[in-house]
Length: 375
Figure (cartoon, helix red, strand yellow):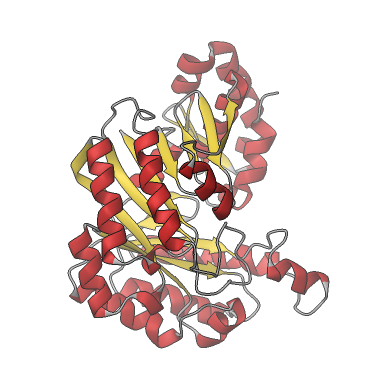
């Protein structure tokens, strides 16, 4: 099993909270797609012949691509890699891009799963985030996607924001449930360094994020989705049975993946690499026949720490037999001993030889993982 991620670094406008690599100028888009096609050729051996079970167009805003761009990229991928005929092919999309005509183009190009950046169904929240779509588009695009035959949808929702009340959050989640959305990715509003939101808070133009509200919204989310039959299979991800994201699940299971495009990351089991986050430099380098990336060889401790961090985020948990087999029985014993503190607090349980976070423990997942890291 392997995955391929394609980073499309273009957006109509900048959301205040976003720190992903993107440009609001589309002038370089044709040149960049051309060089991404070249990068596919140059990286065709990276996955060592493994079957690709998921392809993910992320960004940025991949729904800005036209059908021809998508078809070229997918056809090139099928030429260079062994793509499973039933592969999950996901495209991130903004609601304002998803007209009935666009949806038809996406299906004909080979997209079978949409990840829609709804964020909220409330106008006030969307304006505060500087989203390009409005509340009506947030709702209509889902109905249009379902009518167009997309039966595998995931939407993003953001909670904890200053304009989002408890009642508004409840309405957002209930709207998603009522629409029959198969998968939800829900994130607390986070202030990332260098973003517009970070600057607004520093200049006291907006208030700081209310962490208590965010924690409350997360606890409510876990209760509401469980009642509606969703499986909370990763900290930020909830799915109806049978609809887990194949692509994201491969990340958490340490499966290899290839990243294509500016800023995209790749992992092959023993090293990690990431492309330069600069569109012009990326294009120029590929024109000269070289992929511009930095490489990091992973030490056993780094791989163990990553295993702890990713698996603790999942409902399966950190499998102690895997730790013993891959990293040594001594690491197994130390990890089990160090986890006792969190088990005593009720933040973690030992279940079938796996360390699993409780609902309360999920509030502190990152801190718990870092406390368990090995030097």
